[in-house]
Image (cartoon, rainbow over the protein chains, first blue to last red):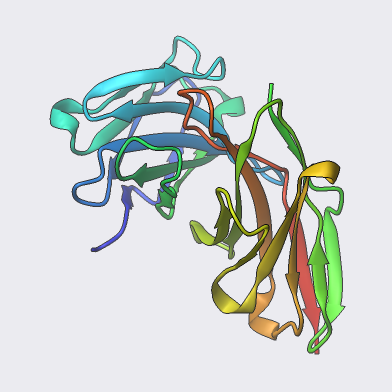
Length: 115
Length: 115
C-alpha cells in the first residue's frame, strides 16, 4: 500500500492557461474524491467517482473544471482558462467499498498558483 | 445542508498540558464523524472516526473524541500534548443515510505547542 499519490506537487501558471493534475488512488479503492482547500479553510468537496462513473459534482465545479477517471484507476482534474481565484491546494482522496463507513485516505495535494 | 463548526481558529497549549478541540455539526440525520490532522505541506491523516456504538472513540497518537448527540458535538481530546502535535486539525462529517459520501469539513483549528 503506497498511499494516494498526486502529481505535480506544485504548479505555477499564468492566468488563462490550462492545467491538469493527476491522482493515483490506493490500489483496489473504487471511490475517488477531489477536494479544494484554500488558505485558512477546510477542504471543500468538488467531485467523486465510483469506479469510472462520476456520481456527484459540487456547485464549486464550474464549467472550466472537468474530471475524468478512465478505467476506474487514476483520475485527472483539468482546469481550463485558469483564474487567480483558482489558486488553492487540490486534494485527492480514495476509499474502498461503497459504504459511508469507509474512511477516505488523502494524498499530499497539488498546490496551484495562478499568476 | 450539513455543516461543521470549529469555533477555535487558533489554540496554544504548553507541552504536557491537556487539549480539547471543539467541533459542532449541523445535520438532520445520524452522521459519520471524523477528525483529521494536517501538518504543513502534508495531506490529511485520519486521527479517529465515529460511526455508531460507544460514543467515546480512541484514535491514533493518543487522541480520543466523544460524540454527544444532544449537543451535536464531537470534541477531540488528548491528556498530554507533545510538541509534535502542532498542526492543523479538521473535524468532518459524512452522511449515513443518503448516498452522498463526500466529507464536509470545518474550517480547522491550528494548534501551537509551547515548550
